[in-house]
Amino acid sequence: MGKTAKITNKKQDWLALAIGNSRLHWAWFRGEVIQLAWDSQHLSGFRQNCQIPPEVLPPNQVSVNLSQLPLCIASVVPEQTLLWRNAALVQVITLSNIPLNNLYSNLGIDRALAVWGAGDTYGFPCLVVDAGTALTFTGVDGNHSLVGGAILPGLRLQFQALGQHTAALPEVELTSTLPLRWAVDTITAIESGIIYTVLAGIANFIVDWWQQFPNSSVVFTGGDAYYLYKNLPKFIPEMATKTKLEPHLLFWGMRLAYLQSNQSKIFKKN
Ligand SMILES: Nc1ncnc2c1ncn2[C@@H]1O[C@H](COP(=O)(O)OP(=O)(O)O)[C@@H](O)[C@H]1O
Ligand SMILES: CC(C)(COP(=O)(O)O)[C@@H](O)C(=O)NCCC(=O)O
Ligand SMILES: [K+]
Figure (cartoon, protein in one colour):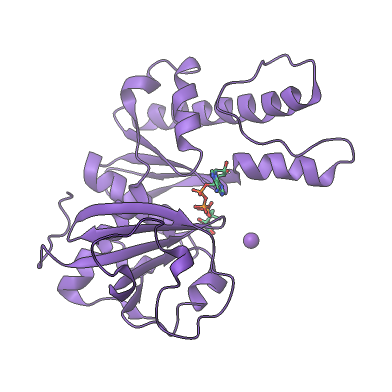
């Protein structure tokens, strides 16, 4: 657990909801410990009552009634945030809740939370590679100040873009293995082009970051993080020892924000 915040009631259950552009990411917390994490579809419409709809709850029964818990939301999709506006016990995290310097006003809350969570755990400076709908780099220096970052289409979005905007190319799904680089069929050629270019690009960003901050940790998160993390050491061998994979990184940042709000009540009510 990080150094920035301490929980007051260790037994308190709460739910974290991170709203991404592809789907909802959920975590049920007991105090500062994640009990269960799962993903669901976006909500399709306005909610009439204040319960959390069953279709977004985890498939297996758990010991507490999750739909009654305080809900802490971090969202990069305003229309989805709005659907929760009438829910009881909802708190929405904003950039003002994040104690990092130099954040620009419309920086994605997911990027700010992930890099706060990463730096709080592994120390600053810190670079986060979030391989979600968009693939983002977010770097913070030793003074907890945003250095900057970059945004490009995520893997699935790149496959979709080719499939949807060309006559002859199919929409390819990410498979678990690395493709042949010099492909002799269309599907493999698409896989090769996107995957090797993204891997080389990520390696290039990380090498540049390490030139500025040689001892910085680099943390991968997001839906495609495992695939990229697993395959990157073939491009930069030192990756294996100097980088980390944290599927729940965003929840670490949300936990810091939520616990801090329990102490100071700084949240804006939705
Ligand atoms: N069920 C799924 N829906 C969407 N993307 C998925 C799914 N399963 C795996 N992915 C992969 O995860 C990536 C999206 O990452 P994710 O972190 O879920 O996005 P976001 O947080 O932006 O909603 C996609 O590029 C895709 O390859
Ligand atoms: C870059 C993002 C679209 C990434 O979203 P995600 O892939 O996690 O759904 C999101 O962080 C966002 O909307 N950012 C605002 C612009 C910025 O960060 O500069
Ligand atoms: K958009």
